Amino acid sequence: MRDLIFKKDALYKLSANYVPERLPRREEHQAEIFRTIISFLEEKMPIKAIVLNGPSGTGKTVTVKKSAEQILKYCKEKGIKIEYRHLNTRFASSDFTLAQMIALSLLPNMPSRGYSSRELLYAVFDYLEKSGNSFLLVLDDFDDFIGEVRSKFFTDLLKISEEYGDRVKLILVLIGIQDFSRWIKDSWLTHFMLRMRKSFTPYDAEEISMILKDRVELSFNTNVIDDPTIYLIGRMTERFGYGSARYALELLLMSGLNASYEGSQRIFAEHVREAQYRLESVISPTDLKAMFSQDPEMSKLLKKLLAAFESSEEPFLSLKLLEEYGIKIRESSVIERLKRLHLEGLLDYNQQQREVALIGMPLKLLQSVFD
Ligand SMILES: Nc1ncnc2c1ncn2[C@@H]1O[C@H](COP(=O)(O)OP(=O)(O)OP(=O)(O)O)[C@@H](O)[C@H]1O
Ligand SMILES: [Mg+2]
Image (cartoon, rainbow, N blue to C red; front, side, top):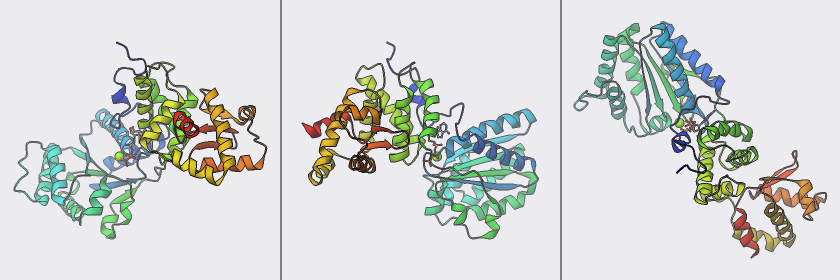
């Protein structure tokens, strides 16, 4: 039976592993990585490490994967022989396990036991020299490795690389949340590290909306979710999810599942709020009741807001509409309370756009506060 909400393969297309066609707001990052790596490939420099860092969910991994696709295509056209591996080093607990991961990724049949980490790296260089391939090696989540291990990895790698001279070309891409190039004090090593100029910063609500719209088209049937509801996810991500696209995609998927379980043909704001509340509750009914006992006027205001939210399926309500529900939006005490509810995370109150959304809990839960 055809699903009311999801298209085929939607779960995959909303997953963290999926590499989309386009990367809104990361085109320039992709271009910079591409250009830098190509220039290293075409230079005489035998080894170079590109360092890339930024908060979680800001697209580091996916942008490097996309640049790598582009590089492989370029190399194919130019007849440049290249091997590419993208390894997650989160679980590499020593220089040895890291060297083992790298060696096995290129030489899967190599018996890695009984070798030291240096010997494993020699095996990698031998292989690259014989095959005449350059090697683009991405080490992802690398700050965990550098942070936990007193590593001689780079020193070994550079020394071995010197022995092979420009017969073997190795380009490293090191990805992490922290800027670990700063932790490395040895100037001999820092010389090989190059930080990218474009930084990976948290996405704002508009950027998240752009990213989500592409995925919505891939994963959902037509008219399942409208733009204001996508923007609602963007606002929640900006405010509660540290601007992480991973958080936004998870919210989108969970909202879709909520709608699907209910047999709804559309994702409404309430499905999104339920998903958000389940991911992480920012404010609870108990918090609200505590607020009311300090400020009884707050309770009256919220009751009116509740009536307004119940009246409409729109995620964002204009202040004009609120007036129809008896909310005196011209009174400074009302404005102050709206601002307070914004700060507490219950509302998203946009003073410029003159609109308000309920974001901190599902409407059903807010209703229960007044039962
Ligand atoms: N600009 C973008 N366009 C489309 N999808 C994006 C974009 N940025 C991030 N994503 C998606 O968001 C999710 C998280 O991105 P990614 O894994 O690249 O983040 P990250 O910076 O590597 O985070 P972490 O540090 O936690 O590993 C992935 O599913 C990715 O495809
Ligand atoms: Mg990543």
